[in-house]
Image (cartoon, rainbow, N blue to C red; front, top):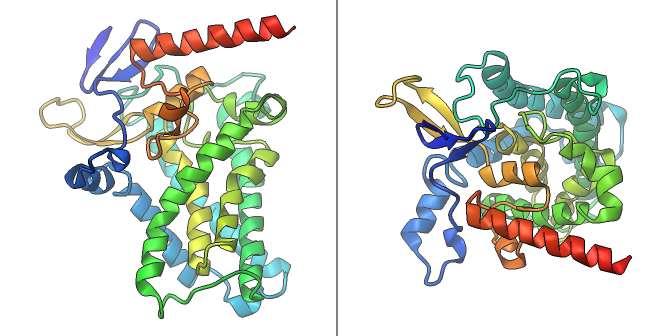
Length: 342
């Protein structure tokens, strides 16, 4: 093991944080209000700053960069193309900023990077033999295209009064709370859709494309098969049932489209200042270690830590030797059952 600030790197080049993930306090009994507030709003917490930034970006986009409902009442190429352009530009700016800083400039080298390897080049698993270009293609063409299709369809449904709608001015408290709840709706939906994508008939022809990215990068989060994009982005259909404002649907899709950049950054922490000086260095929590372990081991951590589904259903892995042994034992039992069935 090579010691470093915040964690250690083993002989295989894999970096592990000193402090392993802890259970979400949202489901602790008795409830711990201080722990919950820190979990939600502390720097690097669930909401602050990244998710609140995305929700604010969605509000601004809905108010100033989205056609009004009168225009969306009929499908037309011009307004749908404008939505695609807006989504693509945001993806390029957000994903591109992470990629430039961490992978092109390599501003913090491999410090806090889960793998000591960089993104693949000359690998036949990826389009163009290049992991980055492969990920960009699937993200912008399929990912952004299906994101836009869902958004256009939902705006059309709102405009034609086909789904329940609320007015922000008459229900400001409800609308604000629902906007924040988008983060939790996303996490809930993500677990079940992601778990479904690991169903054997679906995994090999569809989800395996995303899992080509074992060593993930900022563009990996939305690099999926088009069918998986249809499933992954389908959470917006919850707003066809829950009384919502169009901004809620925009926020849901924008969060789904942009949030994966953080969980797939490949880094555990971002260095904000004082790089190279252990005493003065200031960092912010970055990538999701649980999800990195999912990409590394495939059969663990189908969700994140907001809802403890993986703990409840026995697929949790926090990186500890005990959890790793439990994973290997589960795999052994599964293999034995498969052999006995043949």
